[in-house]
Length: 422
Image 1 (cartoon, rainbow, N blue to C red):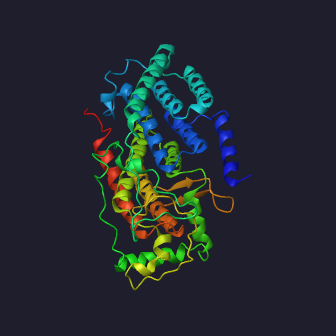
Image 2 (image 1 turned 135 degrees about the vertical axis):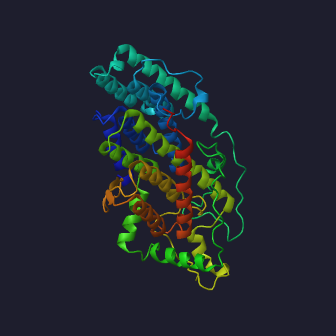
Image 3 (image 1 turned 30 degrees about the horizontal axis):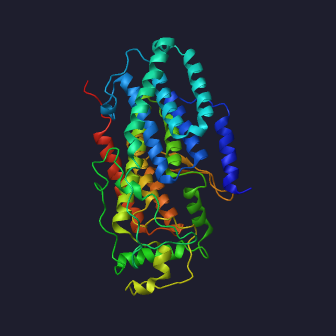
């Protein structure tokens, strides 16, 4: 049995088993979403889209009843929430409807989770959680999720033109599969909060003839070398790469753990999860737009063909291979660094920059399944090291993506789901 398949069986068993009640319905259904992502394993960019659909649906459903903040996408609804609807039922109804639409094969599991939620609400002392309030909340949540799903239904309608491999030093297909770049449609996808996919386009990467390029080239060549990388660097690369985990599942799990420790209102938690996932989804769109704009080669190509870069400080190694398999898309900027920076920036704004927190992942048996950080900046630095130690990115790519992710998160938080005037 492969390690990945073993992880899948364990997670699927956990998803199918009765679910322990979390701090509130919003956090509980966020964990259900994470479980579904791990079981279904959509590609990392698509995972962020799932997160944004589910969590904005939950937010607009809960906030539509609570009326504490501006709605995220009010124009898709066209009708206010019913009075005296249960906010908890609204959140559950929205999450359930979105998840069933996105993962129809797991409907039976979601049905069971909804039954658990409704059973819990039947014993709740909230006046709005009587039978009528629950029914109104469920119906409203379904309406909201269906509207968000309809809005995002055209996300993949734009088909990019066929990719043509250019000459060196531009991006080239990499071993072992030598695939053309994947997920290119995210480069032109309608953003969630940004004004356009290119709103936060970074400057070009350093010229291959520059001193900065040579320094970062030699760092990756040394620490990302499959033949010589120190074990602790390999463990870092494996920890953040995971087997079934993605940046979306890792950061949602961290956010849920923090929500358990820092008690908030139901609508407050819904807003946190929505802003977290909107920032990550927009980071993917912005990063893929930049990847397609600059079309930069990966370290394996750069190192094996350094004799053509015109830089006397780089040396060709035709046999060099990275610690991890190189993903099939362009190098600059780093997707994981961009998404993780967007997530960490949101969580730092919610909980404080120097909050101590733990990240868990489905790390391989030889490594650790969790890491604890003294600050969110420390975690982002570790993500950058992981991509460099994996041999799949240069440091300048991680740093550019980190700046993008932070700006995207700040923009989303300042323009979306803002507090209503008292």
